[in-house]
Length: 261
Image (cartoon, rainbow, N blue to C red):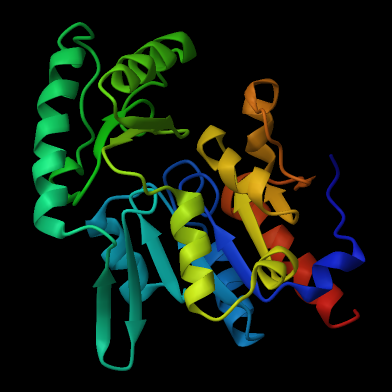
């Protein structure tokens, strides 16, 4: 674990990044984050947000932030903004996705009857695929053993479930951050070798482990240390600052390295 980029990072052309507590911090978007995202685009480095955030939030990010694409609800769909406007793509029919979501939502609500102080997220109505539980966004952080117990019960339904710093995200289907990210990059013409050499990932939590495992060039913002003992797959470097401040720290290092400063 360290925080200095090595020469291998000079080849990075794609920055994939989590959003909550990676680009944000304490529920806010630091101006340093927006400046860092803009710097990447100004240096022709592609920025892809890979998040568990709801479709409504992803629409906002894709429309207004300096990013090239948003892979939302843990890979359920891809939003890209082009010259003709925003496009939404998914490997699963949206009507079927909605049916599966309603089925899962009813089951998750039954589980939460045993946890009267735990609720679905306030943005549940703006989700296309997932069912999300608030474990720290608009409430005091839920104890880790309770989080794990709920995740285990969702797994018993045959659904996927993963915990971020603020939500438990649950879904039916075989998509994931990893699968959709690799598919998106392949669609852009990158070979497997190019993906491993030219793409990096930035994250902060347990639900980023698949990406930490998949790509050799990975960053954790400082708050990843809160989960360090629980991580089976760790980032290759950790920044000295948390959240969006750590992301900006990484971007400054990357641009300086690529331009020989």
